Image 1: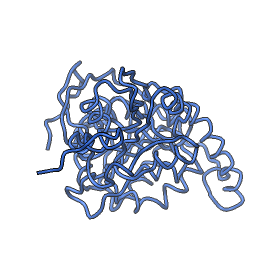
Image 2: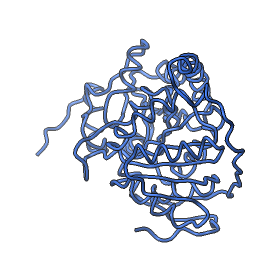
Image 3: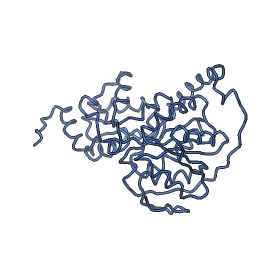
Image 4: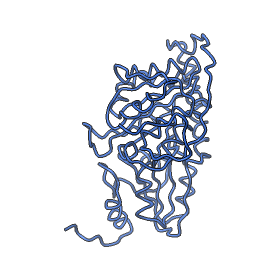
Length: 339
């Protein structure tokens, strides 16, 4: 259990990613938070429950937690739910209909991937749910971004009237860092508007909304291209440029401080134009992603040449000691044999 979060946020705090997300849920004006426990996400709801003016519950499973949050969103309240990566499989039925109906109040779904399998039976990559469900996703790289992106996700959800996924990893959830908190927002629910054609997804109602879902995805792609969470960090060494996200970004910056890097914070829909900009300015492009080659495959399908899992492992965190020999091979350098 972490230290109790303050009722009135001071300017600077020392928080884990889970604690930062919890504080952002309160500060974004959320009224309802539901979850099902599972490491590495458990502490989020434990921390949110400390705030007396939020309704919180441990639901009987992840699907119910997501439906509770959707119910709050339907009446215009901002809502939040959390689960670990395997839990989103349980909630998938609700998720895949919710992406068609959309939402009203901002709805953020935090899903914590256990990269390295410190407490899980598999190493599922939840970014595929954003692609599969045509929903936006944020990937914080530290505790500060966990706070900032949770609040930004809530606002983006209301702007596009859809759920927003927040992909955390074990390292983000449990490692602490300094967090500069913002002012707390007051958000009043507008109330439920009866609209069976929107909320009752029989085939006749669903068909026109699926078309709207694809239109929304096009607009989300344009928003990702302009997002401040997708910065192109310049570098003097143009031999290799990197496309990366989440904590892998920190590892890349530590290992190759002079390399140009496209950091994908608002990572889906993928901002291909920004990737092309980087690719045109470097000799080689390396995708560094934990764990599956989602971005790599998307870039190759778009005709953008890149290296990825052909030189990097698909299992575990991509720490500096794994990045250095992989990129050395990409550059054609001799790699010393491990002792």
